Image 1: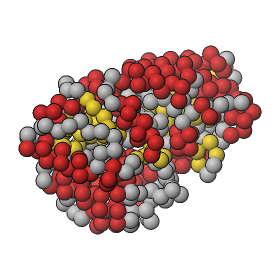
Image 2 (image 1 turned 45 degrees about the vertical axis):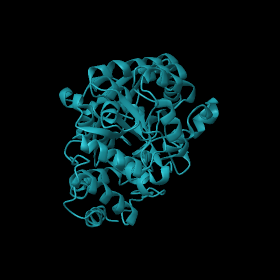
Image 3 (image 1 turned 90 degrees about the horizontal axis):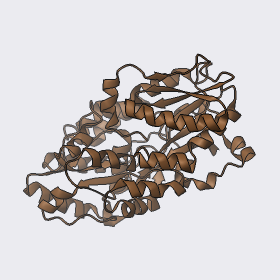
Image 4 (image 1 turned 180 degrees about the horizontal axis):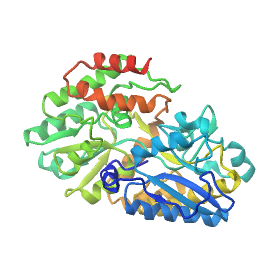
Length: 407
């Protein structure tokens, strides 16, 4: 998964980054495998170049990295897949794999013929990158949604550090105590996975059903959003900003809000930028029931790749224990390969991180992908603030969004 605050750096990058070391076709020339990846900064570029080097050594071919900021990446790849311009190796996010599976090569035969050890990976991470029982990418990262909190603010408000399995009532009591100290409790967002994860944890509502269909008529969804709107109204949550997907992260980092929903991919970024002690726990839920979504990203192969066998050799090395351990140490990913996960815990430097992650992972389910996922996210960005900020009833806004999607 990407780190959301990297989007700020991406804006400074401007034009698409391109590290094309060869003039070969994007689908892979005789000596080159082209690889597409979202990149938000020069630091990103260096890290992913190193991953590409591992793929090149294993495949015997040069791996040529095409980079683009996260938002631009999906526009670009949607025009490339299915054509001769498609990269050979395609980085894919679990939320979007349903949308792009037609242009990707199912990897099941290559997994079987090469003896690739799929069991070495988190089962949820593998499942999240499959569609209709077919594997379309090998995950490099995975992880459940979590709640990060400002330990200093909690201590000042006299609130005990929240333990995994804490309840909505526990959260509301903490929010009240924080408010008495002039501290807003929660940074809200309308970004798909983080809003959907909050709703699931609150009462089990799902915006996307298990078949990948957008389904917004479940009253549990409106109930959970109305709860968020109530927090905004009484001043214990920030207003959602649909135009700026990083507003919630920034509110947490600068101390405006004491908690924010994120993933393990956010941990080291938060720790590096915050001027307070960062803690992490599970999302609050009724009676402490563990309900959270997991998501992740991985590497697939385009159908037009001229040498899928070489591409799979590269992917095998790009998701090896050595490579994913290195990414974990750099704070780029909570590894999907379980043997590499200890490196993330060792470098996170956040008290309780392992306890919170283990607890969340035990009950996490992959967030279903949807062919309408991008459209839903766009509409949430446009109309979601109306319901989260309480200017319109959630059920009315959800009905409007559903009509525009055509569901």
